[in-house]
Image (cartoon, rainbow, N blue to C red):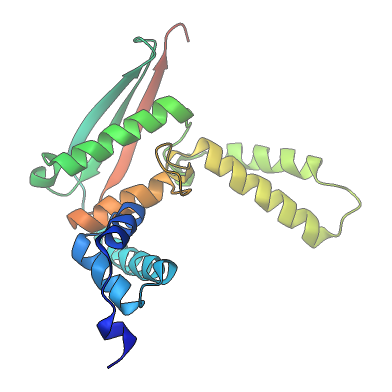
Length: 203
């Protein structure tokens, strides 16, 4: 009998994998069994499966959801965000509500300017790219300069786009997009952030 069929994950391993991926307990246990206890392999397997499921879900309409708020700093900073899902049943659930609250908190904490890259005007991207081109070392080969410019653009996207930002409550570098994908995988629905607003007293 192979090690894949005999390995029995410990409860702590399953718990850690679930926290890292937002997948269900049974999925995490099965992934660890198939990976013979290799945490990274199990995580990669769940990520690949989640991406495939998410691609199918993304084709479905998400017209339900919540408008969530978060207020911080004694009422001096706040946010409103609309998070959509497919059904009212999921929208009324605790897990979806928790996700919406986390996204609203992320907006207050990290001050994103756009939901995602598609929301950024082409003129803004062109202007930012020109800025980075002017900063690239003149003496470097073209391919090196292009790599530097691309790296700066990616970092900028990670600063200004909500779903590209590192999730503030994660210690593992998980992005908001990965957080949303994990919850979507658990709930079995297409989930997306439609719009948001951030308010700071006096601004």
